[in-house]
Amino acid sequence: MPILGVGGTSSARDSGSTGRTASAGSTGSTGSAGNEIADVVQMLHLIAATGVIEVLPRSLVASLPAGVLCVPVLDAPPSHIVLAWNEQDRRPSVASFVAAALKAVR
Image (cartoon, rainbow, N blue to C red; front, side, top):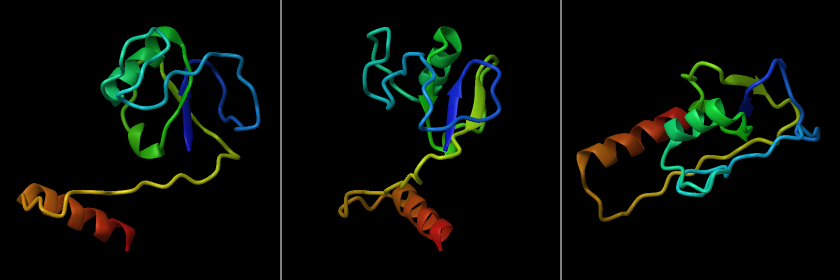
């Protein structure tokens, strides 16, 4: 699991303390400035602008804005991603997404 923030380190440990204030941690919640974070792009820009540190799954850090550093957290526990959807939803896009997710874990 990577950790995002500004600075010059090449790795981090979950057991270590950075001394910086962490942001809210998930979209739809309140960031350190008191504003709601609507999506990952906003969170990445918050990290770049304020220097807060955030721990995110590796899948969310493919493209980083300038000034944001991504380093692995060496002793982080594994994270689990869960997929849930309404059984009654028959849209082809939902069925395609679920099929792709199931194929990816096999």
